Structure formats: structure tokens, C-alpha cells
Image (cartoon, rainbow, N blue to C red; front, side, top):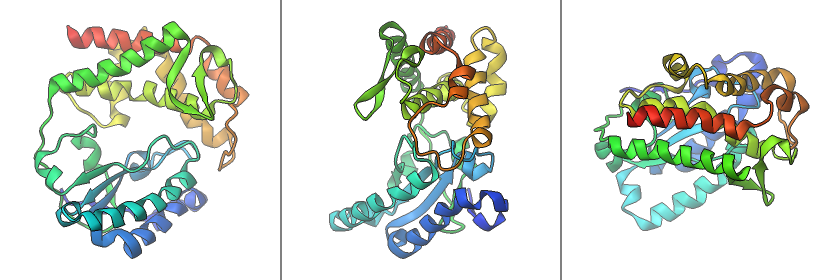
Length: 280
């Protein structure tokens, strides 16, 4: 598939302070990284322009040239330079949970990734108009195991009242807002909730772009769905309620009020029902 180029100048004027770091990243790639790369893709909500300012993070898919991967000296040089580029991710989202996602040119011929092809088809390039060909290999048992691991994490959180993942400043997210200074941790939890539909569809062999997954899945789990709606409302309201950038780790009062308590149980209720359906 031929990749379209990411173009910040086409964005609304009010969004340019939010999207500006992407232009700086693009310049950095051109000056420092391009020789190592086959392509550098942006995917997710920023690629499709349905982002929430201050909430949406920067999702990437970085494809290394085969010659970079096979040359240990070049690989170390690239590593040192890409580490410096991580600051651009944080300028988009101070609560960014992950770094860059990598693949090699060789990996495209045996593509096996957590990213469905539907995601990459909607991506945009920061390098140019390249044609990318994938030879996809997706193991259904592995994808079911991936969903099961999400369910295990939520089950553990429900029983222990602690989400033992993405600790920040030596603190985990606790049930019922017992530590209010855990916005980074809460955002990770809500990201799990909002990706459950995508992981579910992947596990049953019907992969789908995240934005489209909600309408495909909601009616199947209508009795457990409310926490997805709450998470989505928080995501959409963030750019209205909070200034950009949001440099605090305090959970805003309106977020706590909108989400409500007992959130680990409510998320596990949904994921366990989904897993039960997958196994059937």
C-alpha cells in the first residue's frame, strides 16, 4: 500500500501547538534518521485527525532498512539517535505510555505484530510516499492468548484492588481513587478499557481499526459496556476541560466523578465476558 505523507500545515490553526512537535520530529528524521529507515509511520488518532488534544498520544511504526539491522555499528548509531527523539513523544502527551514501535524491512515479509493491517492502512508517512508490502502471518491462538493476558491483568486488579502495571513514582493505580495523584496510571487503565474491543475482534479473527471497533462490538456486550462509554467520554472531554499541556499527575475531580468507583470490577466484568465469548 502506498503511504500518504503526514502534513501538519493542513491541520486547524488551533491544533498546531499540539501537533507542532510532529513537524520537529519530521525534521529530525530527515536530518538524523532517514538513512537508517525504510519508512517512519504515524498511525492512530493523530494520523486520522480524530485526536483529543492533550489526551491522544503519538503512535508510530518505525521500519528499519535491512542494511541497518544487519550492521551492528549502524544499529547502535540509530539507537542513540532514536532515544533522543523520544522527547517529541512527550511533547505531544506528557502521559505517553510507550515509546516507538519498531519493525525491520525483513519483518514485512513475515509480518507478525500486535498492529492489525487495518491500522497501518490508515497510517501516514513522515518520510515520503513509499509503497509498503506486507506478507501477513497472524496466529489465532496467540491473539487469543494476548486477550487472555489483558483479562488476567484486570482480574488481578479486581481481586487485589491494585493495577500492577505502569507504576509511576513508585505508585500503582488503586481502586476507588485511593491515590488521586495517579493520572498517568489511570490513563493507562482507560487505554486498556478502550482497546478491549480491538483485541476482542482480533482474537475472533475479525481485525478492525480501533475507531470502528466500538460500533461492531457494543451490542454484543451491552450489559457490560458502560465503562467503555465512560472512558470514551473522558477522552473526548479532556481537550475541553483541561489546558494543554497537562503537567500534573493529579486526577481531575471531573474525571473521578464521570468515571465513578469500582472501576476495576467493571472493566474485568467486560473483559471476562468477552473472553468467555471468544472461547465459545
